[in-house]
Length: 244
Ligand SMILES: C[S@@+](CC[C@H](N)C(=O)[O-])C[C@H]1O[C@@H](n2cnc3c(N)ncnc32)[C@H](O)[C@@H]1O
Image (cartoon, rainbow, N blue to C red; front, side, top):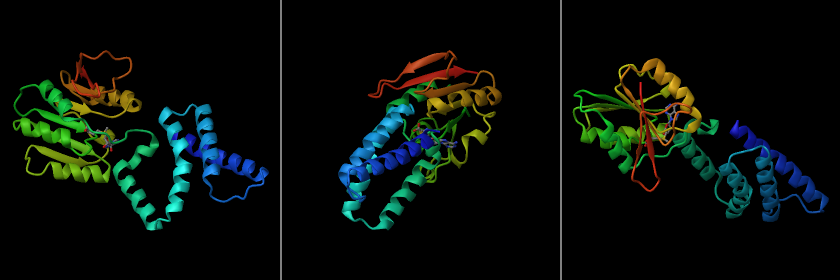
């Protein structure tokens, strides 16, 4: 939906900017002034469509950056390579779900403090990114078994590399929504506000009573957590803990 709004804002702005530019008797060729006009229109249309703030910023930058890049006369293969790289990193983020951003070391330490001292404890990170958090946890708790699930190819590859040499850390390539949670004692997520209601339904249906769901930064709407951990990092990360 967000991507469709963005596309509509860009297309409508290009039509309006093109018509206005022609009425002013200007030639329809790539020009920075035309791009700035289009960007202002796209941002305004985006705001009218109630797009989120970062989309407005993207609209303001997109066409001017495009015209500036055209002036650099870069080889087309470079654009293709950048597109391929971004696709392999961000995968389905364009659907407006979950982008890649990583938990920091301080957050990993706080998560470590939440893990029960049970031998053979099973912990899963749904959407494991590059696996840095799991690596830190797996090193600190050799008695526990850690699993990461990631669908984006490049982060998954990086997570596989991060897991090298750690017998208690497995990285799976797959969709978190299809990954059963029944065997897990702790489920960690750092996803997005949008998916939290769906995640809660999945956790309630699949996690055993007494097990723990830890969500970094994003609470489950309308559900009171058992506790909230304030992580002493610069982001002001909060860990929302839900007991099943
Ligand atoms: C915000 S990052 C968190 C990375 C890691 N858990 C951490 O805390 O550092 C979210 C990750 O979830 C992945 N992801 C999003 N939707 C997914 C899905 N349906 N299946 C598997 N991975 C998914 C994204 O590719 C991204 O790497």
